[in-house]
Length: 207
Image 1: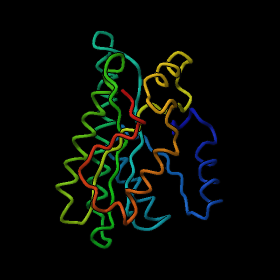
Image 2: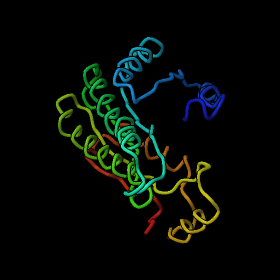
Image 3: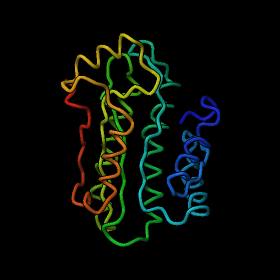
Image 4: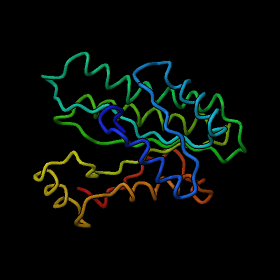
């Protein structure tokens, strides 16, 4: 979630998880800071124990194109969306000590291009990093996959964008956070252990 932009959101999510019987810890971090990944894992391990699954849904996203993107914005997008993902995966792998076959790395991506250049380009880098992990972490028994959930209206869409996305989706609706969560849940389960090194389109057939 966007820290500082959604007051109380972390506590709300934590409360929902607690109500479902899960243990949860909200840990704030600026992922543009290269030292943040180690601090996040230190705190997660202190509060919850060893991490067996890393699901990355963080992002920096500012709309701009080839001609109006600033160097500062471009660099921050890559720092948060690409470099931080590499550092989180590296930290996860260095600490992973669970049974072979039980580890999971999952990244959420996008195929944005026009009008969202630094976001789309940095998401493309994320894809390559996660797919490299599928090979490099195989000796640990860790799988790694990328999910492209397609357009999910989490409050950012205008009415025009929403209508256009619905028209472009054969199933006639937008994706929901639950759609993505179900796929993440499957990939983290034992039944999902044979899926590795894939970029999975979970977008209702969006064309």
